[in-house]
Image (cartoon, rainbow, N blue to C red; front, side):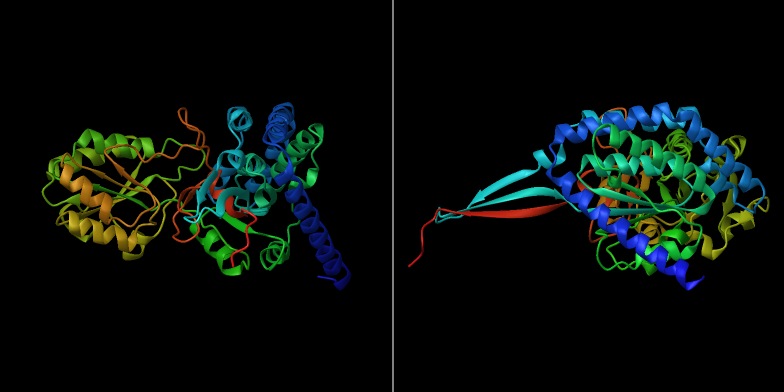
Length: 425
């Protein structure tokens, strides 16, 4: 890269970060009702720009046809009027929610009565979303950040460059209509990987980096970033089929976990089967899954008995397929299943099918996962039909936050100590 161009890009990044920081300070000082109004304008602007976004998406899809883009990435990239409308609805729902910065306040008095401590939720500041081929994710992140008082930097992958730019323009037009600075949402353009590297090595200016995409993408961003990273988890979720578990419950949980589009975050990809489950029931499950378009794989013991099965290699048990592939493995009992899941799963969403209360409680207590599901589908909902927790994704890391990445994830705490004015002698 020519030196002059490199210097220009560096100056542009510094300017963008400075503007994003200023925007974050402004956002933290605006009232919740003002941010609600901005969110409503963003939703309206995105709805008006629907045709432009779809046209930009067509350009990206046509470019993918000319390159060796994996089918999974192409599926993530594809936009439809229904998918865009779903994000419009999320932005609208966020505009109607109570403001988290005005709700999260607690107080405590000291024993001597001379001091009071208040704990208040405040924004993180500048959040950077670094994401693969999911244009709608930028709009969802923008809504969550604005609702929680943060500014947002978006850096998508090259495959979605036209879609991401069109989406960002629509959101910025909504901000400007609400008299908010467009720097509340900054779209980092450029095909060069240096743009991503320069963003991630900022020791100041970015308060949190959220990588979203395939596990290899998340790991790459985590290794490069200097700012704190909130890892997202996707795929390689396990289900343990206990001896008392229902075949129909197992089938339904698996199928429903794949129903989220375009990225079934919590899809069941591995099934551990108690040795006491009837082989005929397992075979029946395979037949039903194959009829739904799934590929079935098995461990060595299953493949020896049923040569029509494809062998799951040792490395596969700790890797996400991100496709309609499910591997089956026999285990002796619940402790063996828990030990295997703790060693090999992605640790963000694992489940059990059982009629035993004791088994379900032991599984919940012993499995080292962010979210555990008992006799219910692990399907991930970004915008649930009931409740208020709109979420960007799932985090499987310990430390900063775990579980659903929602509004609370994008806040931190400020402690305020008030004295009585008395001087201790």
